[in-house]
Image (cartoon, rainbow, N blue to C red):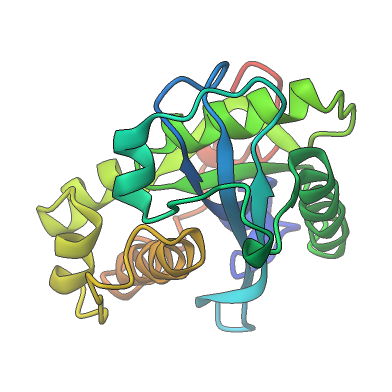
Length: 225
């Protein structure tokens, strides 16, 4: 880490990346063909002592894109019986992502970070749906790294010995209501708390900040990492 950077800053902690916690609810497992039905994002911040906490939340119910596949089993799992119901207050996926990306870019700039990185539980799934929806909407200013993520399932397996979100939260002493699960808003908020706890636990155990050495002095990001 550069000696010019405060180790308790967000940009120093994640090598210039701005972590954003995301969860999606969908009508299947195929990001190219199955509908995105709900999305939530939570931004994070660090206090002066370097403790990571949640910051801003943005959430949308989403209308299935034209021609989207709707798997009955997936709708049953999410509890979204009628994705086209006006009672959902859903918006087009492009509109939802434009607003989410706008907030992320604003907060990323304020944190002096170079690029956003998605944090999610089984992150490849959420990342693939966000990227596919952004491509359909032809959004050119996608703040997320095109392939890198922070996966809380993997991190929880390492830090807590659990990979299921509910069990990982239980191990971290974070309240989790299974009746509220599979809502993008609820799951994102719990995932954000879990990620913060893992990062903060590492700090409490003495793993951060690192000792300054030539080997860990580089904080720049590249398109390859």
